[in-house]
Image (tube, rainbow over all chains, first blue to last red; front, side, top):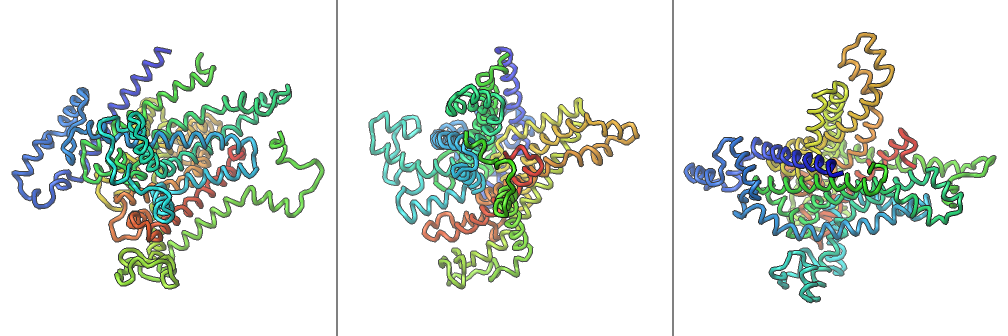
Length: 336
Length: 292
């Protein structure tokens, strides 16, 4: 088991390094010029200024040297300086990550808590109204563009009905909890500031629902398909034949066997939520990694793009690793 | 318990006309609907100038932000352009990009996966590790970075999406070709003295093409959403080109003038639903078990 873990970890590390190389090459061999994107026509027309600016960010070094500088810095936990914010990329990411993690985690929980029971019910009562509802929800969830859903939800519940607050993490007049972890719900709760907590919570409702929609669709669909597959097996007939109650058959026998595809998809879905946040955060003016990513891409802020892509790729790889390990927990056959 | 027998009818009864219709509808209803939706959008896209009541870029600020009315059925946007006309012309870009991404990505992926599986050895190792490498990036982020680096424009964005699109086809094509390679007809072709290119292209791939077609159909919807998403983020088309994602972006702050953003998004939703219905149908048809 330890050996398996070590070899998987080595693979993950190797892939992560290859990933940095790939993104470095993409960012540095394409026609877009960060100097022009950053400085504007006025400053870019002064060669001396441009040269100094290039030197300051190491853009005058040969390509391979720049890559090794990047790798060396990486080993020191240094992802470079953002060209736009003039701050360390890692610090930017640390500042923006909590907003996204809070949003994505809640959306993921919502998708699981609704999607798995819905998928199970749909499979057990196949072709009933609940099955049709589940299929409708999952189809709409995967077919509606997130950015549009975000707009519709905002226009209806904020613009028309005024039931929910507008974009942002807090009301414009309130102050964010100073210090703290950046996870507002936690920060307010620990201070006992329940007005602040309610403020943050109500602002979370709409974006969480929007972000959860696509994942909810996928999880419902996978749970249903996986349950249907397992319901056909002989051990189900066996369980029924020996007089088990239907509930015991479904929860005790079918569900554990149906879990592997659900876990696989669930893990990948969480990683995808982190990136699906790009759309949601743009519409809801959510100061998270998604919006930061978009802004970095729009301004060709290469250190920031590389830092984010690297971190998200590592998160992807780690989640894949965890999925592999969870098989061993879920399926005794894998353990041997 | 009752659920497992609900689909069966008592032995010896003959289904009536209604029951036969219900069973047809259950099997083919949604795929047929999906096909109709897709067909309708294709017709609209091809004959856009016929259907559009106004030129898509005709600016008239005297009628800006008007709600839907008999003259402007879906209202007007901030520059007084007719939302319906822009939506109709936008269908061209969305369908075109969706189909191009899926066809080109499908071909490239199939070729890479097919060659990897057929040749084997270090070629397979290199090609599949490369595929894994692309797959270890979250698609949207990678496409966003590439699109931003290449610059704004339809072609550049299509290229960016293609870079992240082919790996899933490569994976599938590889496993399909591996399955087929063990069959007798491949041996027969080898004995007959055909070269590897001919065996792969004329014998193996045609036999493995079914599941690939399903993935292709299902994927057009995904490709359309992805392109519209990048467009929404400002990386897809150059303004003032009418494109659905860009139209939603233009209207995203106008929560009171909801029609500017709501209708283009609805267009994306219908066309993607159409492709998903169709894709599910094709999948059931190719593999009767998977739809159960």
